[in-house]
Amino acid sequence: MFASDGLLFVCGSILQSLGVGYSPAVQAFALEVYNRRGGKGEAGKLFGAISVMQALGAQILGPALYGFVYYKTVAIFPRAIFLLSAVLMMVALGLLALVRSPTMDEEDTEGARLNDETRASETQILITNETLVPIDDDEEPRRDAT
Image (cartoon, rainbow, N blue to C red; front, side):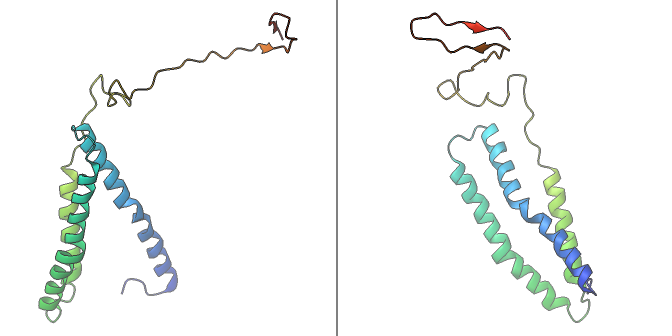
């Protein structure tokens, strides 16, 4: 209906392929929010819950809802299925807009979530413009000032 020629179809396919990163991005965001709110070591439960919700929506409720709407409206208003898609997209975006990530406090930096046993020590390296000169075993080490 929308793609009357091949070029328009290819352009639409390219635009649709940009959405492939949505699911991993949402899962990473959910894990980060979960960890900041105190979830420790239970990422499997989080991903299990996300998988259950995704399976319910994509394989059970979604097809049933769309099938029912199509069955009831195909004879009187064939474009109702597209209207339903637009309405559900707006509802999803509205609910997504209500999600807020936790704000970072003054002490909350990238490594602040690590406890004292897992925090790596800091190492400072001083880089100078001097080079070491190879010496024999009986000489003292010396620096070559270049």
